[in-house]
Length: 353
Image (cartoon, rainbow, N blue to C red; front, top):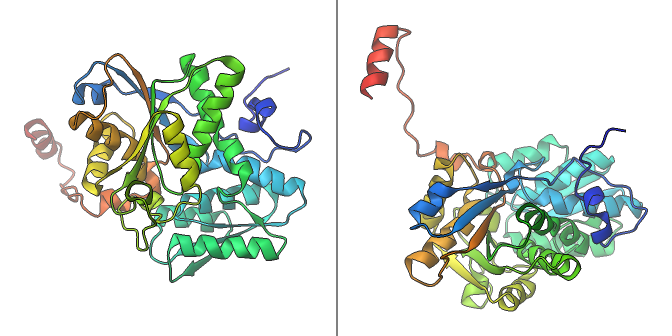
């Protein structure tokens, strides 16, 4: 019998709290690589080990697929015919894809003008009904929450506990790959479901397999950092659209995860995020801006002497692929020069360039 990877539900079913006879709606998500990035370590001064958990290689290009496989599977198990979500982009694409896989309808509500084209295109391509509102993500989330409470429509935002059951599997994979938990885990924080899920996963894996616990460095963008400043941000602004959220649904759990792990949540500037994006690209890993926040946070903490990583093992979670938000690159780059198809001229330019 041929054994092949069947997605996160089947791989970790005994650790996922969901109906035992629930059929998996899967696109073979998860099983993403843990990539060593020694060049970034050297840039930061050396003395520690650093891996990138590249979640942009999930089926729809982001970590959301881990949670969506469980959330949509459970919704289908209950007999739901439609799912709904608010989104800054990645949740929309993932919900639409998994709903399509399950033969269900998907409704997506997004803040007008605040979603990267690559993400919006994904949701539309998978067949979702996309509605824009003249408001923020937080406004959209309040609306979908009320709709799901009034109608037989399944909410698949991270308020859905089954989302976290899927997303926690990334922590399992990290422990399986390294043999234990890293000393530090750095990751972006937007609606705060992912940081909550990672901490849940590391704790559960440690309870059953004694893999240890990491300290967690959560990173928000300065223009959208409610957990850092201590109150909601009415009009969040950042180039990192995936974490442009002013009132995280799981903010309290995120603060708890940081506190219990003896970690912290910090803010970085858009400039620091874009620089970290370039550092990652120079190591062959192209991520959307929000995904670079973890690396940006590590760099900032090292620069200010706020963290000592000597002799440690560190994992930075990169949550989404660069193709999710290519406009950040294309709007500023210099258009390639056009040459005639002349070998001599091109050869001269290449060798002298």
